[in-house]
Length: 98
Image (cartoon, rainbow, N blue to C red; front, side):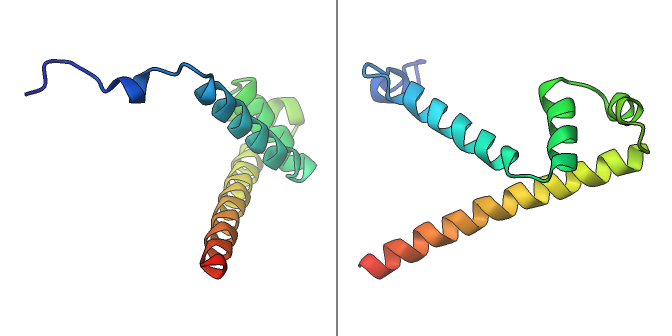
């Protein structure tokens, strides 16, 4: 009855596999962000990496705040659609192999 114990295999990483997975995922994300159009990539970087507010990004780029929001929304959609299309390809490939 739950005494605070955790399954060792889920919390201990003795071979660095979790670090490798984290680095691999980070590299995949960076490649996807790099593939965005420059305008979207710039607002993603300034907002999520630099931590600027939408207003600060708008002021820095001399664009309306609505444009910042639109570019971020478009970038999210694009990144999400790449993720879904990659999953569909993996599933489709797996199905054909069976």
